[in-house]
Length: 114
Image (cartoon, rainbow, N blue to C red; front, side, top):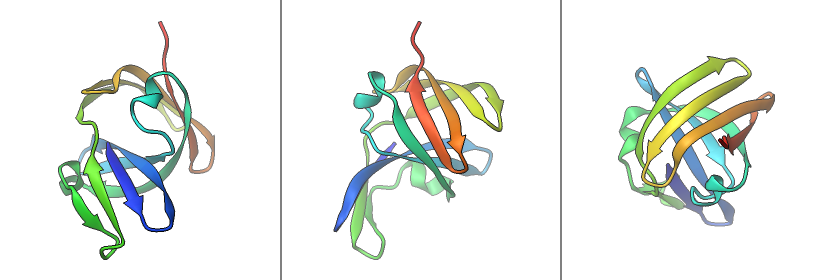
């Protein structure tokens, strides 16, 4: 997960899931430590190239920057066009999570409780 900062814009976090030759990417409005206790909105944005898994530094022609705040692997437990159930094995995000489509590119990201 990358933290994005950009002049004049609110900070956001990109959840990137490696799928084949691309990273399915969701823009989240909460940092990873908050996602352990609360749901957040997620916007499905364009796929990113695999090189972004390890990239940290300047973006948007120097107007912003990204830094890695969590990393790990995941298992896709269930998938359909309206939702995904994932088991994340990150440094911060660990356990089962759910991505549910709200409408269009709008999703809801929640930690699944036992």
